Image 1 (cartoon, helix red, strand yellow):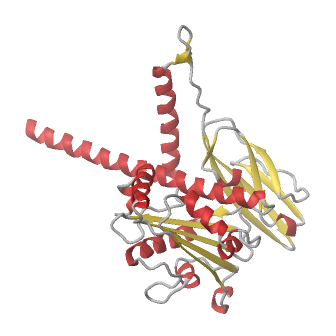
Image 2 (cartoon, one colour):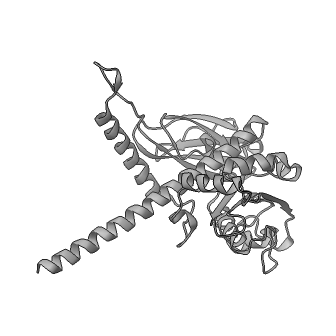
Image 3 (spheres, helix red, strand yellow):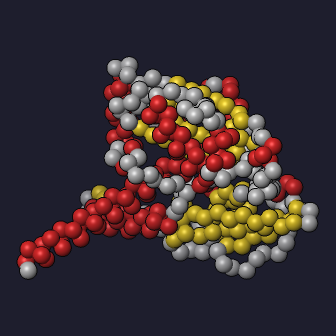
Length: 333
């Protein structure tokens, strides 16, 4: 009996460990991708351009192609079957009116890839195209492959799809006051919004920017906007996680941080983010993907060493895919 109980307990703890690791990986990946989206949007906003909304379908296509590029070691816009970005996004169900793709390989970090894209005229033109509304991001890493890292970025827009973006698409906020960008507001005759399941506001003159106050309680909160354009009403929603601010009390006698209180605060904040990550579904982590075993900080340290020995080879590719008739027929879907 004791042996049976021991086996049961070991299996239970093993399962809990796997679940915790998966949750931790999901949390890391979600926060990273939202941080990446914010960095792109800060660049665009500084130049008077609208922010982009991280799109689940574009992320799926971008992530799959990042893994393909890493495996093949060929940084090209056409995959081994000859399919380009327009075909790949259509396969996952994204039917676009305009589409662009940026590729990079060998960079130590997203910030470095973004910087190199901005220094390249063709990549910069993609990033700063005012017609785009949505963003997909992919990343893969393996220090046994030719480039060690690959970065993919898809930028797109769909006809009659007007996303909204809270706080430049940040994962979380510690303030209930948020800024919301409304794509399509310039085309609309009227707009209204609501927060979570509250009553709708009155119809009002459309505005590209809204300032909203979320309910002051920790957790996910949604802002939903409706636009009246012609005879149709278009609706879009976005969510953000409101977390409690972290305070670090000091010990009066020494003026140092109270480590015990600090630990409790961090554990509370971590638990809140983990709960949020469990409910998020923007990015799917495929089995065996690099980030299951390599954390971002570890990866950057490894690649810094590779770079010092000249083993990391940065490369860039940019492409704008023209819409095809078969895809435009589905633009309203």
